[in-house]
Image (cartoon, rainbow, N blue to C red; front, side, top):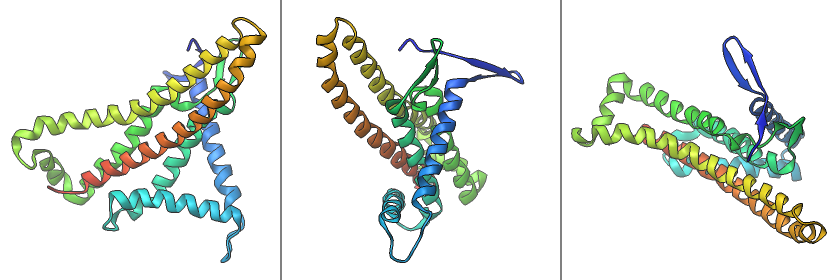
Amino acid sequence: MDDKYKFIDFLGLRFNVANDLSVLISAILVFILVFALSRKITMRPGKAQNVLEWMIDFTNSIVKSAMPDGSGRRFNLYAFVLFLFIFVSNQLGLIFQVKVGGFTYVKSPTTNPLITMGLATISLLLSHYYAVKKFGFGGYLSNYARPVKFLLPINLLEEFTNFLTLSLRLYGNIFAGEVLLALIGTVAKSVGAVTFVAAIPLAMVWQGFSVFIGAIQAYVFTTLSMVYISRKLEQE
């Protein structure tokens, strides 16, 4: 995609306006969604409360599958917020994109690798933090030499590959989906009415498939994040 972006320099740092706005909009949409579903909490839940409870149970089950001993309850809220944020971020570019003067201002945040790397960094930092908290700094470092010392280089390399696979899997799937959607739009305008009419059902099918892919990728990212955290809290 040949999108152009506005940048703002502040205190020696360069900020991508599209990334910042898109992330902010996704966060606001998640807040509005949860706030709207949780306004009337009762003992006999209505439709909105049932949806909210289903989402909470769904993300709690992800945590429980990775940490079945009950130690993962402290990560339930993180998994819930992480899943909803990634899901909304994945769908944002499908719902609407804002382009003004040739510059993109709103898109799916997860089509930028810096955003997905940031999300992966948060999950991996949490895993390291709780590992140090549980085993102490010395015990945390010694885990890299388990079960045998000669695996130390491989265990260190695994930390880097975990970061790359977690972040780039999400980025690649969402970016590819939006690229193909843009190509369908280009084909629709290439000849005239014939290609435009032919591209309409194709675009609708691909958008529906992209919604499904966005949901799957949110699930995969959240699941792998919980798996990485659980592995750090285990001692071989």
